[in-house]
Structures are given as structure tokens and as C-alpha cells.
Length: 338
Image 1 (cartoon, one colour):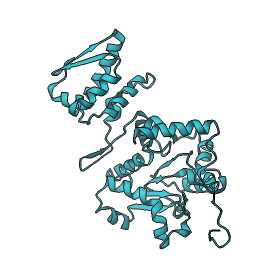
Image 2 (cartoon, rainbow, N blue to C red):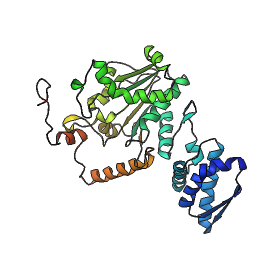
Image 3 (tube, rainbow, N blue to C red):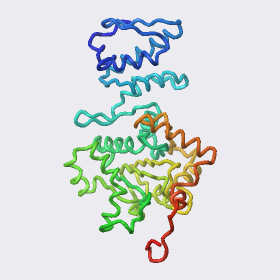
Image 4 (cartoon, rainbow, N blue to C red):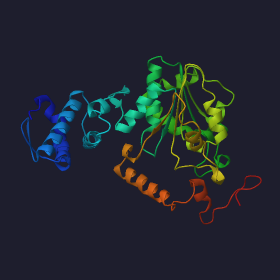
């Protein structure tokens, strides 16, 4: 195969880092001389390897920086015969670009999730930590605001503790709630100029608030993201979903394996997944460990916990497991620890 000279470095990577990944992953042997690639092996292996190289060249041609992880993900997409998706189409879909940083789907599952947000009014993004559920939803919200498809963004989370109780945190009510909303603020700063965010929040164009603040409202012409939805009760989830107004879009994200509700209460996210299946214009996008874009060990950890839960050896929800720790007792009456 002859590669256009201007694309060779992008394909092979700095210090041939992508080439080494190809050498270890391709079914055919690969040899590079200048801008010529030679593939050697059985005809089927050579054909499969040629398709991978051609797709990677197409990806580099779009200006997408190639990395070993992107090489592996491209090969994973091509290996999925049922999908018939082009890695170049999946991995070069830009959502937002700011100061040289581009936000785009990095896996096939993420691409399908982003497409579902475009095509449906309410989308549930279900999956483990690190799959980009909230980050991509917020990127789509900012994109919709930039395109003037909506007039405001509302980001919300249930204020359920993952260890400390709200009453024991220092400061005012705002100070107590802020740690629960901090991940949403951090993501916003990745996607927008930090100096514009306070102005947009003061004018109500962007609102970051606990879920309790949604009660009694009708959210028109808004892009609403509910994060950590596994920590809603059934009543809270129903309350939130019925806030939907005209011209609005909702994305609900959560991981049903990380429930922090006290006393083993039923997660509203789990209930919604059962009750709302099959309703038109509501989509459930399920992301898996294959869509984790953090350190590769995160995917292994997710899979290990999944196996433990499947065999019943992982215990109850996180709130139950914490209550069973040695020396851990419940608070009573006045809220003081005993």
C-alpha cells in the first residue's frame, strides 16, 4: 500500500508508536519503507489488515490525531460485523472545539449515544464510570446552546451523600451543596470560556442546581441533564421527567451499580428503565466497559465488579455496604453521631 506522504507521520505516530500497536494487533505482518506499507500473510488476514490501514488513513485525513487507543478502537469497530460502521465516521464526529481541544465520541457506543441524543427528546445514558455519559451529554447541551436550538442549559444532580452527611459539612446551604455539583462545574469549564460562565449563570442561561430545585417547574426551551440519576428515588425521577416542557430535551445519566440511597431504597433510574421501555421518543443508551475512556484498568475493574455482582458476591448497594463497615453506626434523633 502506498500512503500519501503528508499522512505517513500521522498514521505511524511519533516515534512509530501507532506502528508498534499495528504490529501487535494486525493479523498480517506489516513492514514499512518510506511511505510504502507491505502486508504479508494469509489472503483473509491481509485483506482485513488492508481495510484497517485504509480506515486509519481516512481518519488521519480528517485531521483526527491518531493514538494507540484510537487504533485499537478502530479495529474493534471494524471487527463488529453487525454494525457496518466506518471508524472514520464514528471517531471524527466533532461535537465541540475550544482552544485546540476537540470533544468527540471515542467509541462506537459513545457515537450511538450521541446520535440518540440528536434523535430523541429524552435519552437515558446508562453505564459504568468513565464511559463519558455526563461529559458527552453536557457537550451536546453546550453545542445546542451555541446553535441557538435551546435558550438555556439546566444541569442537576440529586444531593445524596456518598459518605458524609450534608448536615455535617461546613458552611451555608450553598456551601454544603456545592461539592455535589462540582463535577458539573468542572466539565463546563472544559467546554466554555471560564470568564463567560458566571455571566451566563447570573442571567439564567446556565443553571446548575440540586434536583430538589426542579420541583414545581416547567422547563421549556431547555437542554436538561440529570446526572447521578441512580441516586434518585422513584418519586424524584417521576417528578423530574414530568418537568419536560415544549422545545426541551432531557438526558438522564447514571450507573445502576453505584447506588448511594440509604436503607437499600429502590433506585428511580432502575424503575424508569423498567417502566418507560418502549415509549416513543424515549431512548435507553447502554454503555459498557468497552466504552470506558479512562485508564485501561478502569474497564478491567468495571468487568470484575460486574462478575462479582452477577454471582451475588458484591454485597448490596454502596450505602448498605458502608453501614456494615466495622465501627459504623447510624445517626439518630438530633442528627448527632453515636
